[in-house]
Length: 492
Image (tube, rainbow, N blue to C red; front, top):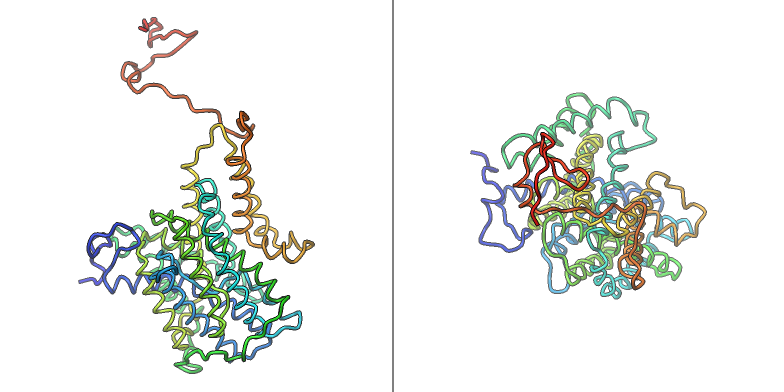
């Protein structure tokens, strides 16, 4: 008898009014939670790898950073999903080290700072972010479907280069980067996702990503593309030691640069909270956004104590919620426990890290594409007649794609501008909010906005009229005729 025999709907405990409060059996929680871990694992270990290398740390020290980021990410996600008063959105959001601050942290290191300087800047900037969250929590009214749909679509499109990089092998300097073998492995994994999704068993369909990754890894092992030889190297257990790299150092310039990163993080997390709320089908008001942002900021302020960095919601896991249809926040909480254990047991972390990157890429195509599709679905509910909403969507999407298709487009701009707008998500969100304010809030009395790109108003006729019409009836010169060109009298 399958341990996944019960469907999600049949597994509810009690009557819950919110989809995210659904409770599943233990085995399903672990299985679906593990999918979340696999989806974000590569993303959460990449920042400490990059920052640790830039700081000149040894391999052992970089290993400490990675383990710490996994452990803190797990605890931060518990806070976000379970929540306590004033902290935690209670939504299925996975927390982890934000990519938004990587470039700034490298700049701090290149400017003469140390890893301790980075930690100090993160602590101070996160405390400032915690103080200003009441302002950000009130932007919900500026996120109508035209803005939310645009941002969600941009999140999915922004993540596609990540999937493409994984598909090609993950390491641009490797000899086999972009090889047919890597692309083929990613294609096989993608095929497995489609096959498992097509199977009419709900549990298998919902676990399609996890099962496809396992199947893809088996194929990679059989073809010699997976290497698990280093899994047993290194310690099996390690607890993150507080301030393993010394006490934090506080430098004003570093703190100011990190404040900009925190503003970007707040913007992206607000968008992710709204996005997952749309996907789950639950209410995300200003209070809930505020609780989510406070969880973000308190986690970011505490994480340097345990040798980690700024925490934010992972957009790729929003896609997993959309594609699996598993909306329970407790599934993500189960994944948090796995994540924290991986942080305590580096041997398990090394095993997951050994999964070939093209396998992640094959699954990522579906995951990230689903996020974009969810945004498009939201945009389909927007009214475009007699307003400038089409301009809002078109401009915000185009502006958000600039740093994706041309990463160096803002190379000549000031550092603060690059920090904000190098992210396609924040670029799109800022542009969509500003244009929505301009066209839908700041209106001149008596001036109805029009555009050559706006659609004409839809015409409507009574459904009762349709029941009186026959096949072949037509209108000419204001008169109604039947299929034989005989005029049909019209009554007043």
